[in-house]
Image 1: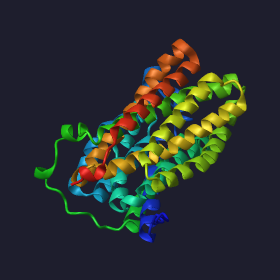
Image 2 (image 1 turned 30 degrees about the vertical axis):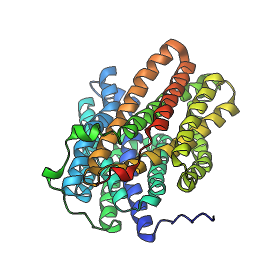
Image 3 (image 1 turned 120 degrees about the vertical axis):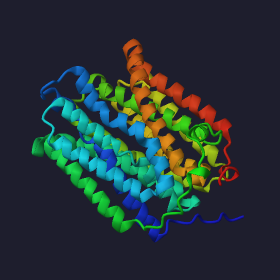
Image 4 (image 1 turned 45 degrees about the vertical axis):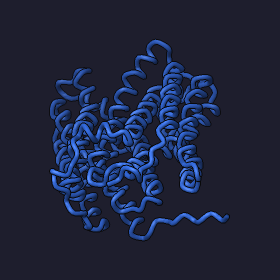
Length: 398
């Protein structure tokens, strides 16, 4: 029997997905763009202590994690576009405050306000609203690529922009990007909001968080970002100390790895859409990520094996980053899609937090090899959970 060709994204879907990916990049640039330069800048401000500098670094992620669920649920009740508009407006306000911040407490406040524009769940829900089930993984892959691109762009451009316009100028640039996102949402994304779902029909937050069909996705994104954060806790040290690469050249490694990883990500995306056993492809990608981590643990003193393992890991990561929200958006009850994606985003940020904290402990006691082995174990445990989940989204959608 000849396999039926999978449909491609329509013109409207492409326009909406590209626009929302650009808007998503605005939020991610807010998280990443200052990472290479913020610690040094904060240390030079009045009132700079290690604890306050750490708070300035983490304030964005903290408020973002705390507000993902409320913003996601509000998007179910009041519509996606109003919540995204609000999130972009809050992010713009925080950027303006940052431009005028000349003390560390003001800088902390600015980053907290920026993070309070926690719109990623609403953006992901809007992508799901405007795409068909059969092309949603590809649509989410565009979002995933925008995340990876924003990370690479930040590593490359952050120091360059700091030298050209200073941290104050970067904050003004962020404000301009937020305003551009508002214009893009107004122009490129159709205003076809579904009927608002009354509060009486909405499930409790606890019931969403504990819905058996959704738990594997919440656990999965936690594990994925645990491993990602732990990886970036160790890889820079490997490049610097084991391979003798100066910090100024690290961006070249990240850029090359990201670009080459796409040659592995695309086949995985196409394969899972065409396979009669998509969950097997999904579990296989998790095991590929685990194998890459084990390879890094075994041999991180030679350049080519490190680059190969890092590239393979990113190929799997990009695919999993796209597949998880795509499947969650199918599995979640439609009237609670935003709330479910809010819980999902919170688990993502918690995974990053625990990946950094536990990864630091592993590194302190067992070195970078311990971090890589820990990540391999977490990924393998996730693969076992995923292989046993067997979720059938059509059985639970409402």
